[in-house]
Amino acid sequence: MSENTPAAVEKRDFIRQIVRDDLASGKHAAIKTRFPPEPNGYLHIGHAKSICLNFGIAGEFGGVCNLRFDDTNPAREDPEYVAAIQDDVRWLGFAWNELRHASDYFEAYYLGAEKLIREGKAYVCDLSAEDVRAYRGTLTEPGRPSPWRERSVEENLDLFRRMRAGEFPDGARTLRAKIDMASGNINLRDPAIYRIKHVEHQNTGNAWPIYPMYDYAHALGDSLEGITHSLCTLEFEDHRPLYDWCVDNVDFARDDTLTQPLVDRGLPREAAKPRQIEFSRLNINYTVMSKRKLMALVTEKLVDGWDDPRMPTLQGLRRRGYTPAAMRLFAERVGISKQNSLIDFSVLEGALREDLDSAAPRRMAVVAPLKFVLANLPEGHEETLTFSNHPKDESFGERQVPFSRELWIEREDFAEVPPKGWKRLVPGGEVRLRGAGIARVDEVVKNAAGEIVELRGWLDPESRPGMEGANRKVKGTIHWVSAKHAMEAEIRLYDRLFSVENPDDESEGKTYRDYLNPESRTVVAGYVEPAAASAAPEQSFQFERTGYFVADRRDHTAEKPVFNRSVTLRDTWAS
Ligand code: ATP
Ligand code: MG
Image (tube, rainbow, N blue to C red; front, side, top):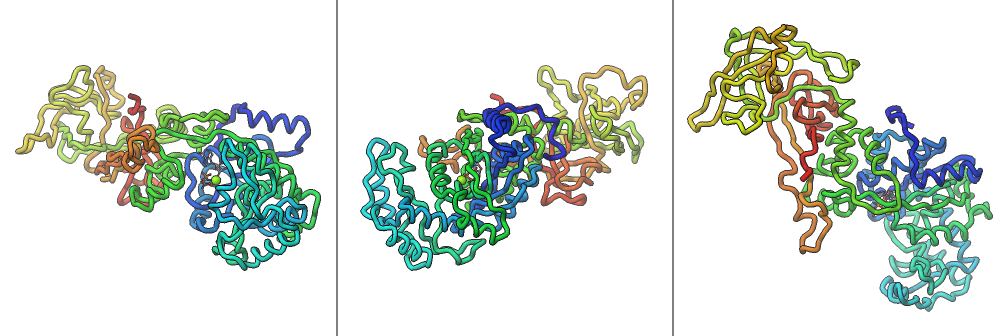
């Protein structure tokens, strides 16, 4: 499907097994799936699981996948989300067969509803929302029939047409499917299939004062698109009988007049009987995934926006430095099942490390700088060293790294009083400067407050690259950048947005807002070598010994470099 999918090992989850069987038995000549987001927010990593499943299956089995906007709730929808969702799906590496909207089918949905009325399978109900709830019964008690349940077909048709004509105010009436008020499945107790809502719609404007309910629209949309396998999350398992009821009773296959509106719009006339299959949704610890909560984080300015690199949105993860390949690898590792589970955040980070280890060129950068002067080199000395861009992959080539008498090294690579097992710099001790030679600290310069402001030392002239003495054994190796040549960079060190495993837990009388990690972002001024500063936005690097970083998609320029830490080199959260 996408160029950079690693040669896929055949995936064997239960959904793929069903698809395999359906193709083998000839039930379907080809398969068709869809990804049906509601354009009422940005996509998050949970959606990525669904995208990788729907598009992945279509790709693996020679089928196609549609992108369908489930735009049946105009009050919450926005073209900004429509654009971002398309951007995200493409970014993940997938191409949709057709781009559709539930609103493309409003006319066919409407005709389907009239058909149900004519056949005595739907009625207009005047109960208020509150009364509908009261009549519905409970898990242990059957519901009671609405007083409007036995309206005549003529009266129902007349009222429904007047609903459609905009005669009644919001909430005054609903159209309900007439199924079974005593059903053990509450979804079948005469569910509403249309409601009155005088709200302008982003695609259909003011053409419709009534809108179909999700279950009805979703089932019929799948049928009209010829979807063979309709994959959704487990909470829809109890809706499946209603899904099937809608498909079977509207039955587009038996009545061409119902699908004529599609033909009029230039869309192919399809009338499939799709099969709904449920899988468990993705949950990750230290994360909230509800669109409502993500929205609140943005509107309450608890984060910088939908694409804040700490957000689990695809826009946020992308800005953080997550790659499409890492996202797909993650989805693959999480797998597909019917078992609800909580995935450890480290699985996500591990997928990114694995991708970037092979995909990201190496660079040197210093995050918390300390000056180190190699006093035995002549004043103004500078030279150029050749470094390979990747230790395990020659195809990354080489680059020139400037070296000079004055370097920046990491403050934490020097200890005046070293702890046990210390392998880095100490007064009088030696360390290897990555790719440059072996150096020793002779003098620790302090300011009036007693803080270390500079180290002065000696570079062993017999230890330069290529020399015999370079192989001499020293304990540690540290990275550096040439102070004269390095570019100052804004470095944003990100950590988890929440400091507890389950930020959704409200049992302590707190909410996720109370669990925000105050240290989720630290901004420091560091130095990067020229070959990092000149990177294009969104280029990822491994900064040696420090972590994986990405040039910020929005703020990075070669003149004012900005890098986001995508992930540390090792999992430091394991407790
Ligand atoms: P809501 O409907 O409350 O706005 P939603 O999360 O269901 O939120 P949709 O836009 O309807 O959002 O979701 C589109 C598709 O993504 C659906 O098929 C849904 O099942 C799937 N999806 C959403 N969240 C997850 C998740 N955490 N894991 C797997 N799939 C998900
Ligand atoms: Mg939904």
